[in-house]
Length: 239
Ligand code: ATP
Image 1 (tube, rainbow, N blue to C red):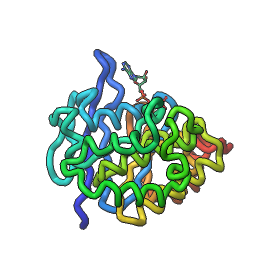
Image 2 (tube, protein in one colour):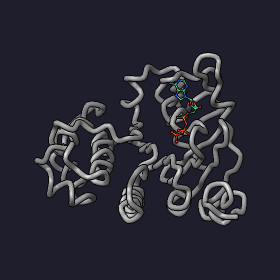
Image 3 (cartoon, rainbow, N blue to C red):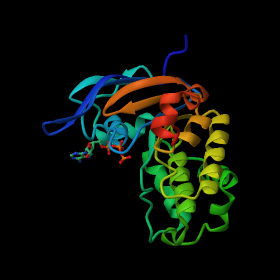
């Protein structure tokens, strides 16, 4: 059996006295696209942030490439090969597209071959190339999302983590972005995608987990969950 790239074991996370993750376990194998779906407030963002130790787990472990990273300081986690595309993108609005992309280099131990990497990203997102000298704050929402993904790819991670990339974007833009993620996965990237947009996420993913109030309540193949009556009722507007 293939060793997981990421294994989260019985993770418990709290904000002060309030526990929001009550023992979450899941894994992501090399080359997979795995999605975690759940409604507002289920704890999806908290789970992603806790991989970086902020907030820190109260119990349980995070294993990445066979190493326990649960206690690794936040600023060192990215250098281990995880890169997060955060909810809301957090691009630098006053900086150009290229300058934003180069910010991804800060979590790369050895930033050589930058021009080749930029070329790869521009191939994935031709719109970014057309706008490479434009101030990032003037980009559309979809372009800003592409930029945030591009910046993470510049870090050359082993695992790309995305927090609700579809947020606030038109369905066609979401479709284009998800198609690009599929392409990125096809080039060998492992992807863990957290989404409220269950429909698109389940279509994209090899495997999926459902997070309900801080607990994993269901897991299976993406398409299997897409056809699941309970999932349809809760997350896909079904009856
Ligand atoms: P959303 O889709 O709205 O981002 P989510 O599934 O990502 O939802 P989280 O943002 O992880 O959910 O929030 C889970 C719970 O933790 C919520 O009840 C939220 O109010 C709470 N929470 C999140 N951040 C903090 C914080 N910094 N301090 C206290 N409570 C928090």
